[in-house]
Amino acid sequence: MQPTKYGDDFKIGDIYTTAAITLTETHVVNWAGLTMDFYPLHMDMEYAAKTSFGERLVHGPLIFALAVGLVGSANFAGDAAIAWLGANNMKMQTPVKIHDTIWVEVEVVDQKPTKNPARGVQTWRYTVKNQRDETVMVFDYSMMFHMRT
Image (tube, rainbow, N blue to C red; front, side, top):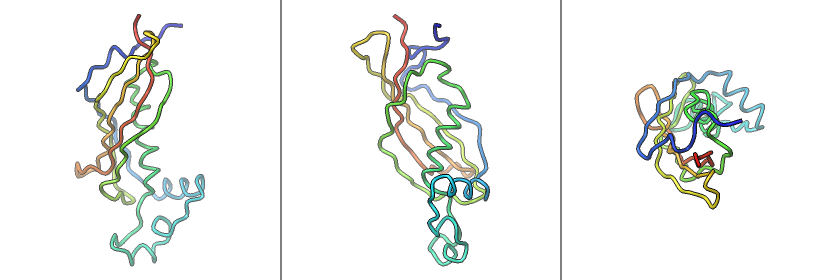
């Protein structure tokens, strides 16, 4: 079956924007249960109140996972992607608190051919922002794509 989209459809500098999601207590509790990450900054209101943040924070890896999910749900790549190759240069820049709303701006930043001309590798920069348009996380997400031959 032929893909309906190809890596060739994306050009360096293209920018895409996802829908947003508001982080809730349920997200944090479910993530802690799935990952066994019960660090008190995320789970203990009394502990977190005494930190410089003054309240509990959402897990950083949950923000990464939600960013990937928001982009996937937006279906920008359609069926062009073959495989995820990794994420690089990840930085958490601003804490995310329960009830913050995040969304993702994606920019195509790199394209490379492979030995097989039917495949190419692209890097998309994910910039996760909150409701105040502050950047909370940035990372480069690399994927292998089907290319037109």
